[in-house]
Every structure is written in C-alpha cells, then in structure tokens.
Image 1 (cartoon, rainbow, N blue to C red):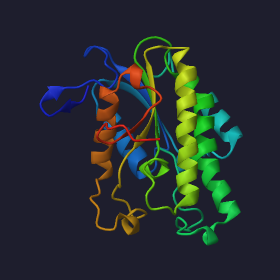
Image 2 (cartoon, one colour; image 1 turned 30 degrees about the vertical axis):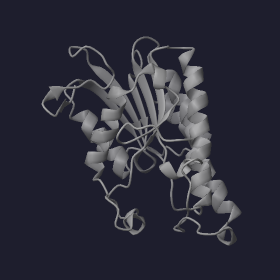
Image 3 (cartoon, rainbow, N blue to C red; image 1 turned 120 degrees about the vertical axis):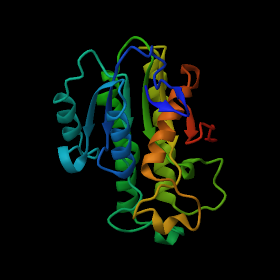
Length: 243
C-alpha cells in the first residue's frame, strides 16, 4: 500500500497485490480530509467513499440522516476500512469548561450527541458494511483527555466525559464485531494536537502535527495493530492510552 520509510506497508495486512476499499466519515474536517487524501493517493486503495455533514448532509446527531447516508452507499462486497473522524470540541462557539460553574446542560448534551451517540450511530449503520472475512478495521477518533486514568488537570468536563463514553462504545463495538469476524480491528485513536484554526488556541506551545502528518501517523498505527488489540485505545504513536 503506502510507501513509508523506504518499505512497503499494508494498512490491513493484505497481500501487496490485493486492493482495498475504504469509507471515511467526517471527511470535510482537517483530519478527515487528510485521511481521505492519503487513501486516495494510495495505489492499493481501489475505492474511497468520503462522507461529511457539509457535502452530504450526514449529521451524526440525526439518525435519519445517518440511515439515509448508509442506504446511498454501495460498498460492493464490503469495506476493508471505515474511519470515523467526526467529533466536536467547541459547542456553538463556546470552548471547553474550566470549572463546573461553567457547565451548560444543553451544550453538554450536544457534546454527547456528537461524540458518543453519534459514534454509536456510526457503528450501527456502518460497522455491518465491513467485510465478514479477512483483516478489516474500524477506527474512530477519541482524545487523550477522555482517559479517566490520565486526567490530572480536571476541567473540560463535557468533552472529557463524551470521549470517555465514546471509548466504552468502541469497546462494545469491538466485542460485537469479533463475533462476526475474528480478524477485525475496532479501535479508538488519539490523534494528538493538530494544526487547525480551532486547536491553535489550545496548543499552548505544545508540538502540533499537520493534518497530513496526523493522517499518516494514524493510518500507520492501524497497519500495526492486531485483532488481539481490538477494543483498545491508542495514540498516534501506537502506544496504548489508559482508560
């Protein structure tokens, strides 16, 4: 598949002669667009379908729109890879809370609707589109701040809690998918801090990767994960993140 560091790599551990197909959800965002581009540039990726809210009216908070998007997809004999890059950090322009006095019930509910319930709907409608045989992968973006064990600073309650809920949903999806295909990998991925106008004010001097670098990192992680690691939570370097 992609050429990386002078060697041939394979996202789904297939033979270098075998093409694969992919679906990207949330393809208009920074990471989603970069993942889509990386897959489109991969000579072994025969087919990429990219879905987004802005272009295809795919709204993960509206089950009818998710169902319609799924109905309009022709996956052939199934996808080898589904990548969900959809998510929300700021709600209606408001940044993450710094203290409980800033909690807004409506904003918190919206964060859960997109990050947790939306991911569950993505699994409901798109997980069955993975091939039933051979190595497949379903990855969804999470965030290290969703880790309970890694929380040392507090704050960001809505975002943290919605991503923690997402992680539990990923674990459940992995267990269910393993009953259909033992060779499948279903994981949550932490992309790191990415260079976008939205994240610029939250970086605070930390290293930020470009969306293109992030896409290569995350796809590289998927290359290395085994079915035994399905249901896990991993960062952009492939290291396990504590729950």
